[in-house]
Amino acid sequence: MAQNTTLALPSTVGFSAANENDKQNLVDALPYLDTDYGDADRQMALQLIENECRTFRPTKNYLKFLPTPDFDVFLTSCMIKEHARMAKKQEMPKLDMSRCELSCPSTTGRQGDKTSWRKAIRNAEAQNEHLLLRNLNLQSMEEYGPETFLRANKTLEKQLHVEEKQLRKMKEEIMNIHSRRRQSQLEAGQKLKELEERWVNMVTKNYKMEMTCGELAAENEVRVKKAKLI
View 1 (cartoon, rainbow, N blue to C red):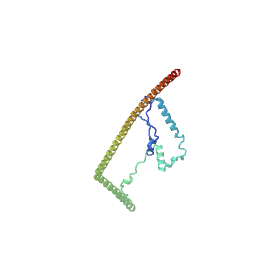
View 2 (view 1 turned 45 degrees about the vertical axis):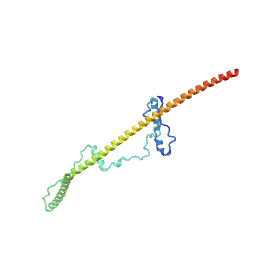
View 3 (view 1 turned 180 degrees about the vertical axis):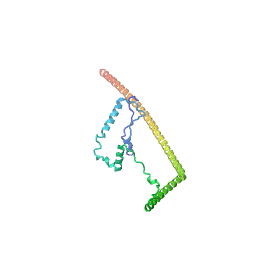
View 4 (view 1 turned 90 degrees about the horizontal axis):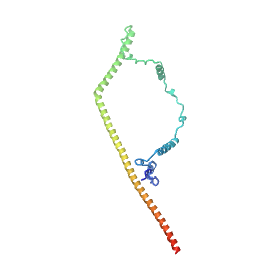
């Protein structure tokens, strides 16, 4: 095969209608065999890409069909206050822990004493209920948490193994595709080489036959002339 001849698959013309999708996506090149690309071929390919990119290149103001964005819609009163505080470099207010405190009720005045005591008792009951709930959550976590986390970890490990298996399978499929593609292209290249050799031989034979026919024709003309002279 000639060194500067680019190996390519035949045209998609003639394929059956069942292979219509394959015809549209067929790549008519043999990258495992086409190694004779030069700078001129590369520049031509880049120019083709550039020409194709011009057909869908966006304009400078490609968002002009959209309405003007209103960024202030996200500025709530809370965010405005926070931005103002940060601009003044003020510290963030600390959490109010007064509701968790059990202050001593006032002992001045009977009515005030009863009211403050009722308020203190309700506060103590609420905090006690909150502490009981936290204690219940901690006990539940201590009793069921380890087993729950172990099961979750085992589930994650199983999922990891499944994903790794799928990844290995996918890599194997990719390698098989590359291997089959390389093998098919090598076979196609060998077939093209054989066909080219046959073509060269046939052209050579035709040329020799043409030369022989020319010689015979010249010889016949000479004989005809000799026959006329006789």
